[in-house]
Length: 433
Image (cartoon, rainbow, N blue to C red; front, side, top):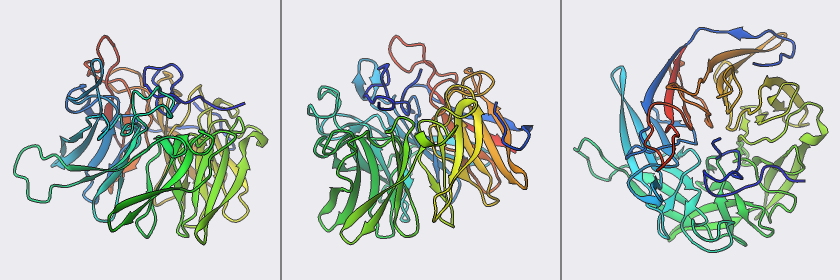
């Protein structure tokens, strides 16, 4: 049996959980409710700003926020539905200025429908992926209509821009070809090693068309792509990757049914695959590890599951470095738990979002704090599905003042998102402690 089935359109009922739209059980501690100030800092309109920000945000050193929206823009990829955008929210005093950075055009040259958050390279360049666009053929499970996806780069203009809106320069670094190549990048962000190589995962392609792990390496003439793993014969990657200081890669796969966590270790010119844990063997450990893992300074892994656990709303867990012992930190209550990676602050607190848990079944933002008696759960915000947003597929970004930021894939006040649809377009939110 396999996990959630993968597809290619946000309006397809079989879409993977990382892209689809549609309280907690305690382990040794008590639930805390904490007063927070919640604020929407941008409502997407479906125009040049975009619509449906499926991924979360990245931040630069100045605290400006960067993200992608899967839809919107002025270039149509479906009837009345745009190809997606990349954007920046720039700090201006106590407020924010929304700046469109790029509108994806689709077709064979450009990508469309970015579904993962972008990552910053040390030189300030952004790298990301698109779920569609690029090479069009019949190997990516969509009849060849939408392409197999791309890897792109966004860079600031080479000269000083004096206009109000200053788009960045986009370069497509690689166009996926589908089986036997990779195809359809997952919703996890790319990661970079110390040599500047990029790594990610796909849900199509590989030897068995179950997806693969890929590497993109810079060369004098451009970028070279190689598949690290030879395909996932029992179900493909479910999340993006995490990387530790030794260059080991960590991710999750959708088979066996509850999901599994794996490690890929560099070994000369090859990679060694190691199955760390099968969640099917962990009582109440959760099902569907869809969010990417994170690694702390000691090499411990932290992750989440989308469903399962005592409360059926997903779980938060740790895998200890060395022996990979599994520790269940928390079991959430609801029906649709986290779909993106956790965030850890300098005090060791963990932050995350859920897709459909919370008091209104429209998602939530939570905090887990370590204590002598276990982990303390704090509910930071329950989305109502109205003007505050709905159904977040987002990480949590923390600024120097401890403010939290993220996105919701739907909700808000913008309604011009898709022809004939009543979907609201999503928001960027801020929580002040």
